[in-house]
Structure formats: structure tokens, C-alpha cells
Length: 273
Length: 169
Image 1 (tube, rainbow over the protein chains, first blue to last red):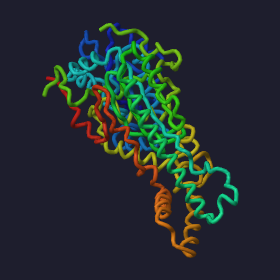
Image 2: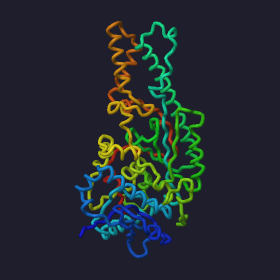
Image 3: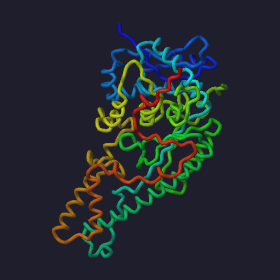
Image 4: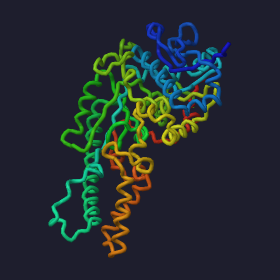
């Protein structure tokens, strides 16, 4: 028989007692059903947990598995799926991927110890969602070379020099695009200021994680009150209007992944020093 | 705590099967959040978070299955001149161009002196040939712009395990 241990997804407030229903039939990591762990009988702060095979999640196995892209994708998507299901009903504090306990009792003890801090942060994040805003520079690509100029215009220029002068023109176009991106970033910030209550700057997605064309130069997450979300999205999406070399991509709503941990400079009410 | 019901489901245009981003979300965006964000609590199984930081780097370098990765939107190698000269889009075959240009520069050097301004261009070009241009290129100053109220920079320093402990009691 396979030994199982407890995979914890998120902390959530189960005020109306409706979360169990939200999780019904939803496959978690390793396709296991997800349940809630409570601290005490009346506690409405819960942890969503599901059993996972110990053999895949002990330390050495985890280390190896996390580098298996296929395994990582399936766990990441399952983790995210459970968090989304919870977030569609209530306020959620997502836990980092692969937070694993020996059993539910260990999860319960952790919850007991941290309940107050969790409740505080849940209250702060209530009725807010996270929105991602990425800015891309779509600088003219080096291969976008114009048709070769007529021979007389190019007279005296060797092919090498003509090439270099063309490169120079491209570089200027690139600089313009970056300048435009700064302008867009300013506009996004101005637009966001009217709606968002917090912001976290993520590392830009370079290469391996960048999907769209262009270079990602800004990758931020904003915490936006529910009532402002549509206006936030509309205003931010307009930031690149009239600037053709820059693209703004808005994603969301997300559960507040980027805001689950309170800002470190901010004293947390109820938290021990 | 009056929690609105179906909070993220309030956005039908974006709603996936479970509300919010649903299964349509870009894996890159999901990985960024599940690996780098969220509350860090030391569970019973200890994985060193530095390993996870490394993981993201390794993902960049070791992609197990090319087709799988492409499907997930991870196709950086096609943009990386040091790894591929395959023509795919606007980034195509920088490496080929580099070779061509270097040959031309060599030819120029043999024939005549290159003016200074052009030397500069040549440097930039060799730079890109190292495959590091994307990493090293100056970023726009957007980061420096004054931030919105409540802004906090979350630059890497991945040591959350110690710094995020906030046990009560």
C-alpha cells in the first residue's frame, strides 16, 4: 500500500461553510480529492489539503521531480486549479508549491499556531484580486531590413558599411521603443494609482518564460478591490494607445498570490515581533 | 466578513472552468506565482527554496521535451542566437547575421581602417553573438519611475523561509 502524506494548497476563510462544496469533485495534485483541515470546531480559517504519495514527495524525490517539466506542470496546474476553486468563493492565501506535511494533524497544528496571523491577512485581502500587468517592447527586429537601397544611393558604401549603417538605424529605432515603453510604464502607474491598493514587481519574464513577441520589460502585479477591477483593466489596457512599439498585457483576476505575505515593513497586527 | 460569493467568477469574459484564469492561464504566469509567490511555510518535507530558484534557471537551460515546452509557451531557444539559427520570427537567425557581419568586418579590416563609430556597432554586434544580449541590454528606466502608493519592490533575494516567519503566540 502506498503511503500518503498531506499536500497543503492554501489557507482560506470558510465563512459560509461552502468551501467543501466548491472542492467537491475537483482533482488535486495526483488527482486526489481535496479536503479542508480546521483548527478547532468553530475555526473558519481552513487549509485545503489532499493526500499525495509519499514516494513522489519526499525530499529527494521532490528535488528530482521539480526538474521534470511534465511533472512540474501537472503539479503546478493542479495547485493553481485548487486555489482558483477556493478563490471563486472566498479569500485565499496561496501557499508555495509543494508545501507538504507528514499528515493532516501536522497541518492542523501549523494552522493553530498561525491562525491569528492568517486571519489578519485574510481580512486585509478580502474582496481584492490580483491583476498582472506586463509591458513588452516590440523593437524592430534585426531582420526587418528594408529593401536594399538603390545602387546610386549606396555608392561608395561597401556592403559591410551599408550593413553597419543599417544596424545603426535599427539601434535608434530600438531606443525609441524603449523610450516609449517608459512612457507606457508611467501611464500604467498613473492609471493603476486610481484603482490599485498595492503593487509587487515581479522579475521580467525573459526568454524561457516569455510567450509573446517582444521583450518583457515590466512584469508587475497589482492588488485591486473587486469593485474597481473592470476600470483598472480598462484604464491599464489603454496605456499603450498610440505607441506602436509597445504592448501591454493584462492578466487576471488571480488569487492574491503575490500579496499573500504582507509587506515586510508593515507591522502585522497580532503578530509577534 | 461579508465575502462576496463567486468573486472571481464575476468576470465572465475571463472565467475558466473554475473562475479566474482557469486552465487557460499561461503556464509561465502560473509557474511564476506558484514557485515564487505565495506564503512560504516550512512543511515537514524540507525543500531548499534556493533549489527552486535554481530550478527556474535550470528550466531555462534544460528543457526536457522541446515539443512539450513549446506547447507550454516556452520557446526561448528559438530566440536565442547562441542556441539556434532557426528562422522563426523577428528574432530569427541572429547567429547567421553575426557570422555574415563578422566576415564583412574582417574583410573591411584587411582592406581599410574602420571608422570609430562603426567600431562601436561592431562591438554591439559581437555582444549579441554571445547570446547574452537579452540579459545585459540596458533596461528602460521604467523601474525607476515613481511608484504607486503602497509600492514595494520584490526583487529576488529568495530567503523567505527565515524572513517570513510570523508565528503568533
